[in-house]
Length: 393
Ligand code: ADP
Ligand code: MG
Image (cartoon, helix red, strand yellow):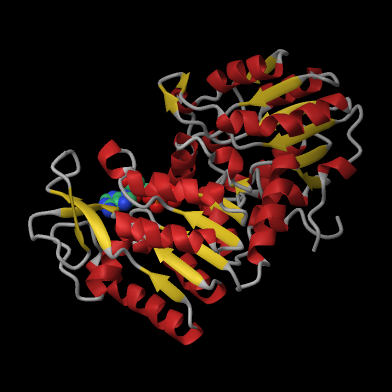
């Protein structure tokens, strides 16, 4: 079922409530990275150009249903105003009297940012009463917060059932790219999964192992698979509780003839801050050392598979890439994905950061703005924030 596009909404002279994802990393009141603010600009600009009055609503952090100045969106209003080159009014209220008054005063072509929607206890409960109060602020609803689409919250789901509702530009781009990925043929489909833990990503692993031709596993999660194979992994991060999960992924792979590649060599050290690194075979890690990256032989094999791919999905770094001495595996995989002519999608906060650090983000077909949301999409699950924007209104 098609997702309704905001381009088809009649917005001239109307007030449009836009759910954005302004959940930016903060250092006090300092915005450390404004990627998410910039990502929302195309939709906001388009609506302003079409003479809409734009009211923005977002969450920031986890204030747990209570006002908390630490999580105020006030700094975001200032940064957004700089990016847009026009004033952005900010109101210290989500959907009460002050928000109503500010929305009433708003003219076409003007922008208002509401306070953090998670200051309202009804937000995470998908409360219809909060959705009704938000709906009173506007005539039309646009959801551009892909990163929050896997949550059924009042500002992402319930509200879309009240107002005429549409997907914004960022949301449409995510749906198009991720749907293309999900619909890709198994032939030539290579998935690269890494990151810290198997338990975080077990459902996507189980799904992908049936959907892809080759599954490359690196990062901390590979340790649990190595353990399952009976390897000595010293003091490496591993999850004994996830051994059954690892085993069932490998059984599914066998049944579907999926190639699952684990690291054959690894970079080890006595501790995460140590420069005393060495490279050893994945089955010969000394008892007092830990695995922190994939080794050169593994990189070469993974790169070979990536170069031959027609479709690539990557989530999760190959090692502790935050430390220079363990960043090589992740950087080389990033370069290989960028150099490939395959349709490539990268999701996950840390993986995206790693690709940007490697300076190759521009050569990837699609970089998803949503970590958890992109994983759930790839798992084939229905995302409530997107479902609410589908089909006939
Ligand atoms: P993403 O945000 O891309 O989904 P994750 O959050 O799942 O990725 O995992 C990223 C984290 O995994 C990073 O902080 C990285 O340091 C850690 N990690 C990767 N490999 C290892 C390893 N071998 N041992 C410990 N931690 C690891
Ligand atoms: Mg992460």
